[in-house]
Amino acid sequence: MKRTAKYWELLGRLDRVTPENYEERQTFMAVYMQIRRLAMRHHRLAEMDCNGEGYIRGQFYRCDGSTPGAYVSEDVTIFTAESDKIETKITKLAQSIGLSVDYQGDPRGYTVNLKRGNQTVGLYF
Image 1 (cartoon, rainbow, N blue to C red):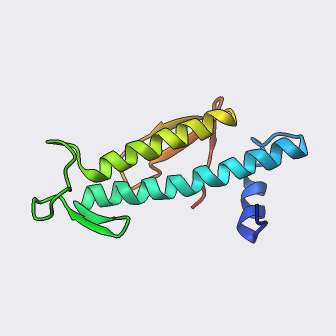
Image 2: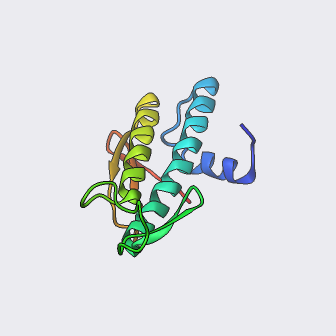
Image 3: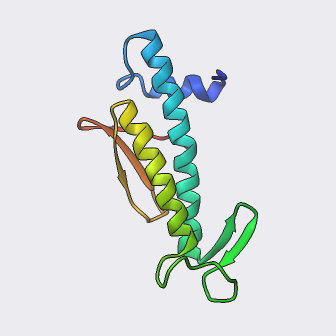
């Protein structure tokens, strides 16, 4: 993993929840960075779902019926379907490093919340 200034800043902020062992800490941070990247994508999808339009893999979708494929089923948008896929990935990664995950669809705050026990683990976008 590339050690950028953001990496070291995050490591400092997460010091209270990271393992003491060096190898375990490196594994934790590698998985955490993957979760963080997926959480940012999850947040963008929540914004697009709220706005009713946006791009997924270069394809524009609008949920007013003017673009085909915006609805996967009668009441499930493509943005919600993509969010569900990301939630599955995040949950699997979080469980591998001993974190629990809560999701919310409101883009005005964090859409992914991580916890270790009763401590909240910030994502720090």
